[in-house]
Amino acid sequence: MTAAEVAAFERSIAGGGVCLFPADTVYGLAADPESEAAVERLYELKGRPAERPAAVMLFALDRALAALPSLGPRTRAALERLLPGAVTLLVPNPERRFPLACGPEPERLGVRVPALEGALAPLAAVRVPLLQSSANPSGGPDARRLEDVDDAIRNGADLALDGGELPGTPSTVVDLTGYEEDGSFEVVREGAIAAGRVADLIRNGTAA
Image (cartoon, rainbow, N blue to C red; front, side):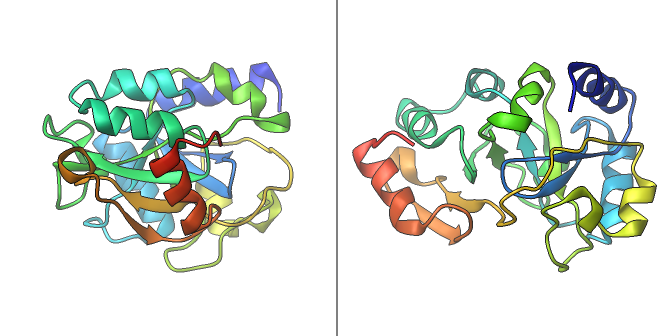
């Protein structure tokens, strides 16, 4: 994956494209979270119900925090302990940012900041937010290699980035919507990061 390929990826997203890309977990589909037409195409490629939420991915923690200025200090500190990493964090979204990613709950948003190491490092140049979902038919197996992506999805994407073989386990989903108020959190889906590790990071601030 070259800098030129990553630049083409960003241009395609900005132009309303739907693209395949490697995250730190599995291959994903990405679109401009402000483009209703692009998001609709992404959902159609996956066969995903339109009412199901997705996540917004940014490729640096500072960009994620800047995109969500209304986060309280306690929640921001939790994000700084957990990200970047293989987690999707559900956070309060009182300003209803990125509504196309929120499904029926516009005041709750899923946020991802992947760990960009090795072959994924060139993705750090991407400065725009992405609406992101795994590159598999809804309910189907996740893809750890580009060639594992369903043919219909791969052929329907406008551009594909090859990051080699990925770990293959989707992100762990953590609900932090109550964390600001009372310190509560819930592991909604255990994935690449074990629930106990998540709890340790949140409670003790152990470096990821």
